[in-house]
Amino acid sequence: MKKSLGFWRSWALVVGTMIGSGVFLLPAVLAPYGSFSLLGWVVAGTGTLFIALTLGALARRLPKIGGPYAYTRAAFGDLPAFLIAWGYWISVWSGSAAIAVAFSGYLSVFIPALSHVPAAGAGAALAAIWLFTGINVAGVRTAGIVQLVTTLLKLLPLVAMAGAGLLVGDVASITATNPDQEPLPLLVAGVAMLTMWAYVGMEAATIPADDVVTPERTIPRALVAGTLTATAVYILATVGVMALLPADTLGASSSPFAEAAGAAFGSWGGPVIGIGALVSIVGALNANILLSGQMPRAAALDGLFLARFGRLHRNGTPAFALTVSAGLASALIVMNYSKGLVAAFELMILLSTLTTLVPYAASAAADLVLQVRDGQAAIRWPSMAVSVAALLFSIFALIGSGVAVVGYGTLLLAAGLPVYFWVTRSKA
Image (cartoon, rainbow, N blue to C red):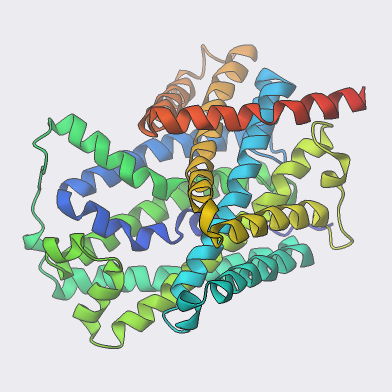
């Protein structure tokens, strides 16, 4: 099959996975910190850039499907690699469920019945899951085109709000605020942890390496360019919204971009931003579904997952893996709309974020091990320094997730051990 992901589609996969529904709520979360929130964006963006550079170096060394899974396997062996693939796979299909529910929620602005009738809301979320699963089964090329178009469209409202805030807003009114009177390093670290969630997903371009044109060059460029693009958009959009709305209004808002758009453009601003949010969510959903087929396929090709997950459809896509992932995401959506299981669903979504941070730490450690193993440590100390910075930042982000979430995440990874031993013993 001809490779179909060039630089721009790989860039769109990075940006489209990172920029989802979260950015449309973050200005309200960051409002109490004023301009200190910009320091949080810079710290989180810098740390993520170290991770992007490390993943880029690994992609040049090992341009293989699975990204962090492949790097972990090369450095540490089968079992650690399986745990990375297992956790990441769970994170993307459970994340798909959350994104689809968010899509249904934003769509209710235009179709109110979706919020009043639970079955209708669930139906809209399920329809979104299976629509984009069908697009991904149709071919990586098709999914890549959808990803590029939705990414470009989702950037428009964010850039528009940034421009409106800088042109007609009161930027001087954005003051530095320390609500709890914490020491500055602790304040910045806390704000950075809030913004770090917006960067989860930047590793996306490394996963479908088999479909990337000259992956050893394209993936590193897409990772760095995508991270810088998202950072610039995040900072400018945050400044724009803060310049358009007073801090107390912004902090109490459940739709800060829509309110800011109303202040800047009048009554038509809110609905336009609502459409932009829907496009943003659709792009993130498409990317998550694509990854939910690629990661288990990578493990299956190495004999660490059920063989059927590695087989390709006539269109050159892992249709079975995509279908199973969509089925699991659908089950979570049904759980979300049944009254007794909402808490379990929310926990799964929280854990899905955690299980995307673990591969960052594993990849940084793998890069250090591979450099030392190849005898390159003495001559590539700048690269070693970048990997150490990426590892330390990944550990910092994991600790910031909280003891309880880390504990649950460990149990989630351990739940994959029976699958690993069953598959590997069957292979033997």
